[in-house]
Amino acid sequence: MIGFLHTAPTHTATFQQILDQVVPGVPATHLVNEAPLARVREHGPDAVVVAQVREGLEQLAARGAELIVCTCSSLAGLAESLGPEAGGPLPVPVLRVDRPMAEAAVRAGRRIGVVVATASSLEPTNALLSECAVAASREVELVAAPCLDAWELFTAGDHDGYARRIADHARRLAAEVDVVVLAQASMTPAEALLADLPVPVLTTPRPAVEEAARRVGG
Image (cartoon, rainbow, N blue to C red; front, side):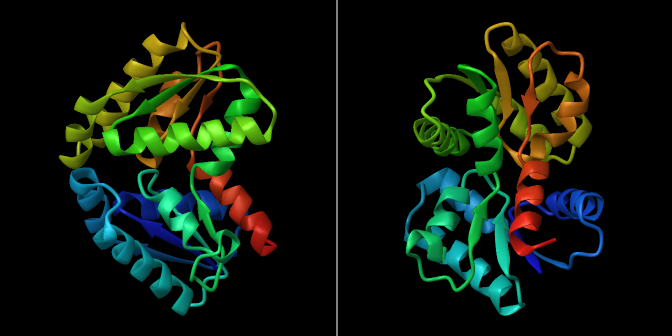
C-alpha cells in the first residue's frame, strides 16, 4: 500500500487517478492536512510544522502504508528526513514528491527554470535540484521564476485560472532555459497547456507515483 500525505484536498484525486493509470489495483491511502503548509509559509519549518508532518506520516504508517509520498514541495524535504533512509524515526520509507522530477530535470538540460507559486517552495526545490546535480555530476544553472500572485487563484478554487496563469508564466520563461520545472503538484494541469513548447516541461506527480509503485513492487 502507498500512502499519500497532502496539503490540499484536490491532490487526492490527482494522485489516485495517476496511480490507477500507472499501476491499477495497487492500494492507496490518502491523508489531507492543510495546516502544515499554512504554518510553514508563515513561520518556516519550525517545531510545530515538524510535529504536524510527523503526525501525518505516522497516521499513514499505522494504516499500513509500505511507503509514503509527501506531495507538498514545501514540506517534502522535511518529510523525507523523517524516514528511516535518512535516519529518521518513521518505520516506513518516505519519498518526497519532487525527487524523481528533479533527477530527470538535471539530466534534461543545464539551465533549469523553476516555477513556484509559493515562496516556501523555492528554496527546498532549488536545494534538491542542486543535490541531484551533484549526485549526477552535472553542472546546472537554476533560474528562479516565482509566480506568487497565482496562488490566490488556487486557494480561491479557480483551478483553471491558476493553471492558465502558471502556463503563461512558464511560456515566457521557456525561451531562457533548457527545461521548465513546475515545482508544485498543484501546477500539473498547466502541463497540458504547454505541450507545444520546444523545451521539456516537468511536473512532480506522475514521476513520483511511478517511483513509489516501483519501490513497493507494483
